[in-house]
Amino acid sequence: MSDSADPDAPAELADDALDEAIGRVEHELGRLFARIRVGWREAAVTVHPDLQPLGYQVLTSIASGKATSAGAIIERLQTDKSAVSRQVRQLEELGLVESIPDPGDRRARVLVATPLAQERVALARANYEARIGDRLRAWSAADLDHFADLLGALSR
Image 1 (cartoon, rainbow, N blue to C red):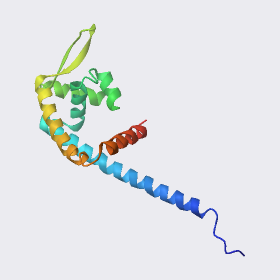
Image 2: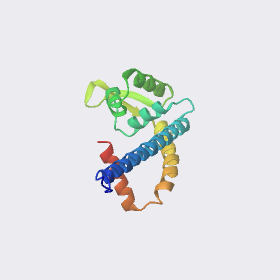
Image 3: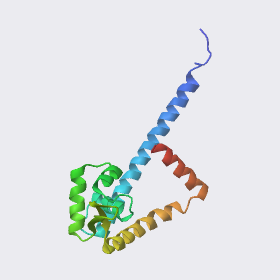
Image 4: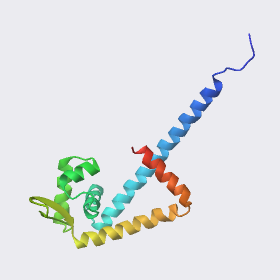
């Protein structure tokens, strides 16, 4: 019998360390997602006390111009048509969104945020950005760029 070390031991230790690091990343991402959900809930209430977090996401998609039709919102938020329809209807009832004829195709309609919605979304975003901005300002620009690159690679 030989007293030599197992040649696979360093590889096993590296695998264990990698598995542990992956678990830590998953845990921290879970905490971050939970914080984001709380932020959406707080932002929704800032816009209107009856607005749900999904309604806030729909509204910000419309207000930013990134999604101005039900189909585009569904695609952007990866949610179902009935949920988007309910949220758009509520946004219209609250005076936050209007459906207008599409200037490029009069048969179609586009959703636009009202001035009231733009004002309230700006306030909600300012509150959220102040909270996260305070934390991120402690990081260097290089660290922020690296973090953004890593997040981008993860979401591909």
